[in-house]
Length: 276
Image (cartoon, rainbow, N blue to C red; front, side):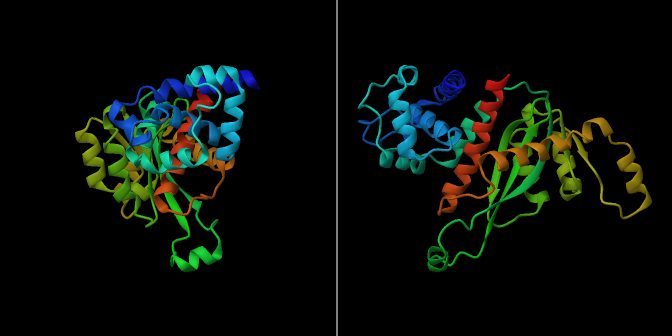
């Protein structure tokens, strides 16, 4: 077990150290007198991987000699739980999305991707808190872009407004178009302008048409069934992430919930790479 955990730490370290200096400065203490940003990122990866509290993961890491060596920290040099919590707040969503992208590169990618949305419950906070903040949205919509070769999560978009797939699909797919050859999606993403944007970027859309006329059947018949059916890989990955890390987000603030989901996807990628 310790061997697998150390392999996970090594992979997490390799990812975090690839962040730019500007990104690392946003994670670390703003005064520049704390633990380096990449070390904070690795500890957050460990926290989710171990399903531990901030205090538990710090206690464990401080007692493991190989982990201390990987983090280049001695006993007594680890950040406190409050400092680790604040670093999670400081790093904006784009940094967690960059960590997700870097983690996806640990897995083989074919360029054939699928996109699908799932929902996380956000009602874990106390009823008193929910009433006080007037929270009416009870779920977070997370749209995952997954490469179908080994199920690597490439990108994720989170929202509390449940936007239509035709609005989110282009946003997620087009910012990753350079890495895609095809994109499979269900009829919820059926939109001609979306298809045209994908073609303009050199991505072949594999999106079924909603049937309103006989020629829609003809359009659907032309879609490569083998590639389109790989869309189920995205659904499987969504399910595994929710089973492994929970189908509910525990953070109270929406921005922390989004980061929590993105971090879970990155941890999933690293765990899959460790299993190879």
